[in-house]
Image (cartoon, rainbow, N blue to C red):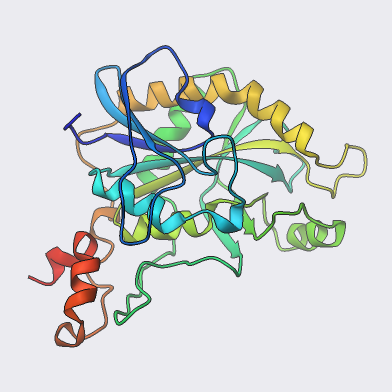
Length: 288
């Protein structure tokens, strides 16, 4: 398959297991940051090339803190991907975001501390803009695609990424609610920031599985609860992705593809040849 994927989806391995995906193949590209979490599944959806990547590995063997987010995003960039949808389970910190709903958040609060957050950490300083961490254009299209299903969907809200792998304490959950946060999960940071550094449009389809542990009349979050909701929502996710692929315009009208244009602060003459070689895919066009 030589055509560039019009969309990549990062989520569970079950997402790409649906009949309308044709001509599938798997590739496992080596990147300057290692290999991605799992071989990338390529296929055709409505005649358009797409890519799927299991964030936690096939069989969900990789903890959130140990996911090689840099390799995942870099590998998709190598394939020519310009748009990514991150599909993830999350807890709700709001009464109106009920279990079973889907949320397309517009803001992100990063509360992780163990993860590599940037491609640019050796001899090259880049200050990327993350005021709006999700692509507004792609998020609007994703919301329209999910709205075409029979699932309740919300647009907007702030998602916090915690380190995990444990679930929150009640004290944590109540503090996050007091800050006005809407959703809680373990995956979106640093995925969203790395996508921005790679100049890839990125949006999240957040599947609400529970009310975390703050709700007084609902059962506290458990693995069983999360899995049940994700299985139930897999068909919704697949239908939404299928609809989104048919809606995507040829080119984006957002600023994501130019995110690095004014973000590199290191003097060009001070960037080592090894760094330039390693990150040429990301910065090469700005150093010519």
